[in-house]
Image 1 (cartoon, rainbow, N blue to C red):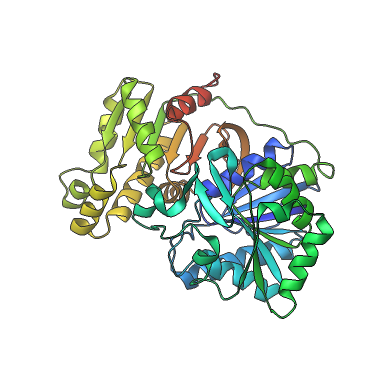
Image 2: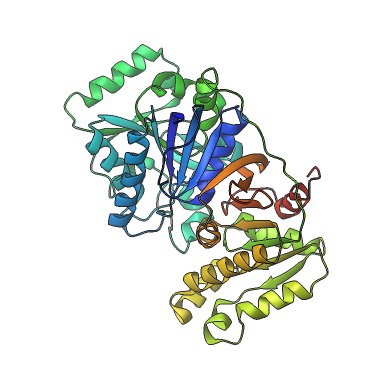
Length: 422
């Protein structure tokens, strides 16, 4: 059985691949599982294990129970340290699911506190004075305020946690992070003296802060956050792990790009692909629901195209998404089922390059493909690796969180899965 240095439970598949990619980049052998495995990891190597769930927008009680099943598996298989991975924009409703999952772990294992560190500075997500910023703009003033599933109503992490978590928060601003490790831990200890559990929210604006956070808190048994800390945690564990083998990026076959995210970044990526002359097909939830457009028709359009790559997108402006939701009711599920079927069909027909944008869409696609374990390869953008299913090593799968990637991300992904530089 492998020696699990770090066990990560992620709330969606793109978040899981994001975290895994940073660990692999630091030379940590990493296995990504789609759901809780039914057996221990093979071999005797030191490794990190990342378990991808689909709990970001799941009902709160189910999100907690599924997450705890994953954490129990990790503990039972000897994980030295646990990590709850959520989005760098803290995507959740007022009721959860981030706070309830954190509380369940703290209470189940008797951990007094954990840190809350969603930042990912390389992608413009930072924490200053306890507030989460996106490219310097407070979270609730960005496009995330209009997110159709998890609209963000505040940038203050303590305030975001207040209605969904049971315990108080201690902020560690940047000037306090300048103190010695012992002094910071003394502040934490004093704050927690009369509390059963609590959260620590350190500022995190750059990699200097990441180094200090891991120096001070890197040995506590349970951490939470985005993928930003994975680089420093990878460096911490590097000495105990053999260098990871990076799988080959290129394969053969047509590339299918499936864009379900409505984020500003994905909308720009769709536009950039179209501007470059790429063939694109709009998946319309209203037409799919009334039968005037079918998944079979979309597939026929893909097959009829002589281009190497075809984009199918449902990405749209927030007002159009809301309109579709009002008319169809379950518009998101209609689109997810369609994209998942297209991915399944693409694989059957030998299209070995499947590129997906959007956490919920990625979750639906990975469930449909049915693979349980992935090797992690090169990254196309920070936090977005090429993945190879252990059970089908001809396939290259790229899963992108909606907010990630350069404007030309789809073009880069198509080139790299062909085996060429971006």
